[in-house]
Structure formats: C-alpha cells, structure tokens
Length: 192
Image (cartoon, rainbow, N blue to C red; front, side, top):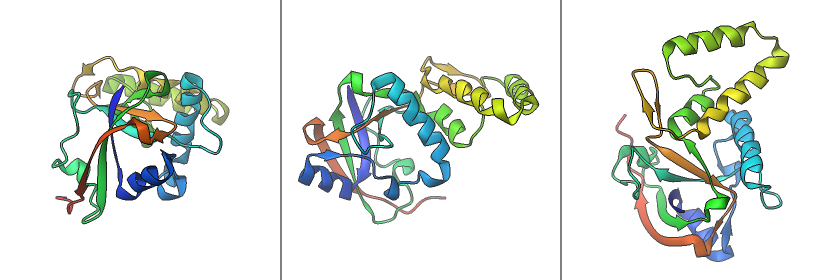
C-alpha cells in the first residue's frame, strides 16, 4: 500500500542508520491523549497483530487527503505544523496491506477530543444523553464501541459530519526498504 508519512528529518536519519523506525513516545504528543492512543493500539492488535517487542504506539502516514490519493501538498499550512525552520522528511512508502490499519482523520479528531462520534446533531444529543445516564463502569464501554466508527471509511458528508475524505494509516514500524522516495522541507511560520 502506497502511503506518505511526514516525520522529522531526525526520524529519516534514524531509519538510514538503523534500518527501522518505531514511534518514540517520549518525542511524541501522546501524553495528554494517552487513553486515545492506547485504545487505537489495542484496536491495531486486534486487526493486524502484536507490535514488535517494546513498541507501544504506531507510526502514522496518509493514505488519502481531501479525497486525493497522492503525495500531500507540502505548501499547505497543515503540513507546516508551526515549527518554523524545523526540517521534515515527506516519505513515500510502500507498506504491506496486512500491516496497515486505515482510519478516518475527521473521526479520529473527535476521538482525540474524547468525544463520541455522530453523523447528525440529533444523534450527538441522544448519544450524550445516553452516555451521561450510564454509571462510570459502563461509560468507557460505550465510548470504546462508539469510537470503532473511525474505521468505517464509507464517504459521508452533511452539515454536521464528514467521513472518508481524509484517511490516515497506522502501522507498527517503518523499514528502510519500504521508503520509495523522500523530499525534505522546512516548516514555515503558522499563518494563524
């Protein structure tokens, strides 16, 4: 499966030196959303199997961005990430399909906010009422089951929700031989 991952230049150098890269949680922004990332890791175990020894969190890449299956436009401010002057590597990679879990970017954003996924405002209100009526013991079960919708990539869009437009990929490791091409760029100052 052809994917595109944007990593710091340091990650690319690690791959060049060691032949493989695993996510380093201490250099990631996982700490304040650890529950969500641990949930995703557990789902990945169910879908593609156990990670290599010592690996806790996945490597991320793009499968599709705004309905397009092509390399991300590096001029787009989303890719700048606000790290002015920091060097990045956009790598086109080929990871075996059976090692990849695809998920919807917009629904993942809802998960990161620790919210429930819904397709309408009315559904959101009903889900919230149901969630709030549950005892603490059952709230996590409901949320965890609701979040599984992140793996449904069926295109959908209305005034409340969008799904299937931007699709991300997660996998346990990135190997040197999976890199097909690399393009380096510098982060720009955020326009915000």
